[in-house]
Image (cartoon, helix red, strand yellow):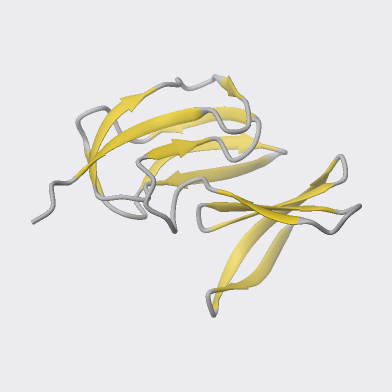
Length: 126
């Protein structure tokens, strides 16, 4: 289902899905989970909003598009790959400016939660 949420004071569209007692919410390249039994919240990083040089799968799913290749320049917030999970499409974005170093998945791959998908080299500091 599509939701409207406020993140850092800005209205964003988000996708949400309840699966096996966990509410998954994906917005602007970030994935949040809430255990519906305990009400415990967590954030699964998946591109955008941080400074990690690795983009990891925010949940189990299937890689449907790879938008860049190793050696490509990448900017903060730039889409790098798309995956499908829980009947929804998720665009995973770069958290850093730099160069794509390696891609450890292919279109059609089924990936598990937390699998490192893309590794980037940060730009040299000026």
